[in-house]
Amino acid sequence: MRIVVLAGGIGGARFLRGLKRAVPDADITVIGNTGDDIHLFGLKVCPDLDTVMYTLGGGINEEQGWGRADETFHVKEELAAYGVGPDWFGLGDRDFATHIVRTQMIGAGYPLSAVTEALCDRWQPGVRLIPMTDDRVETHVAVELDGQRKAIHFQEYWVRLRASVPAEAVVPVGAEQAKPAPGVLEAISEADVILFPPSNPVVSIGTILAVPGIREAIADAGVPVVGLSPIVGDKPVRGMADKVLAAVGVEATAAAVAEHYGSGLLDGWLVDTVDAGSVERVEAAGIRCRAVPLMMTDADAAARMAREALDLAEAVRAA
Ligand code: GDP
Ligand code: CA
Image (cartoon, rainbow, N blue to C red; front, top):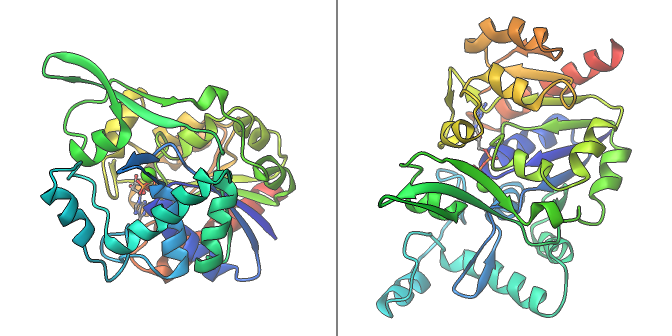
């Protein structure tokens, strides 16, 4: 079975770990979000690609959900001693090595997709991880700060400000001119099923879908497209997805997120059992819906969610 998964960071990575456990023999291609990428200290950092790579490769800091296990922060402390910031983005010593290798390869002319493949040679994530594009896309958030409207980098909004001010707009700068990375459209057209894990619908999956050609390829693939809600009980399970949903005029409910993707894209949608009351509303929007436990408390729970998603895909296919 060939499965394509669109993934952000934590939600995508933990779901993928469950999917691998549920179907060990499947051929899984992950299309990763690069809208969160940022240049820090002269280095190119790809937080979502790295979260997927480290989680599936066994190097993730489990409690945090991002960054390396057994991490130290000597480089960061030394940079701070020189007064060189930003101090709000946590880059550990082990993590730095990844960004150094990536930046060096990009400087030597390799596209991000080739660099990601090289990094994955070490981590052996057991999936094919492809960035959504080799072109530069950077998600910016329009906010009002000190009485002024400004566009700031997504990481500044998310990490420095902890989404503490309303997001007025979310713009994936560069997306319109970006091309899908080599292999992205091919993987979609050859897939047997396409899954949207419980990743952020705006700044993770929404950004991937903003690269011209990707949304259309998924809608036209002619195979079941099934998603899992990142919103449980009208709140994001982790993080502040409600803030960016508000910016695109979508309420933070499992049903509203399904409607936001729409039946043109989505064939099936899983909501948590606490949101069983919204199944009817999602089905009324032309999307098959089931309520199942959606909390990824451990890899087994994530594997059960993956099986439910594949099961719903089969029901869609049989219909
Ligand atoms: P990020 O790039 O690290 O923010 O990660 P993603 O975009 O992949 O995923 C973030 C989303 O995952 C958030 O909106 C969370 O609500 C959701 N999420 C995290 N853990 C869980 C979980 O256990 N269950 C569900 N249903 N969603 C989760
Ligand atoms: Ca992210």
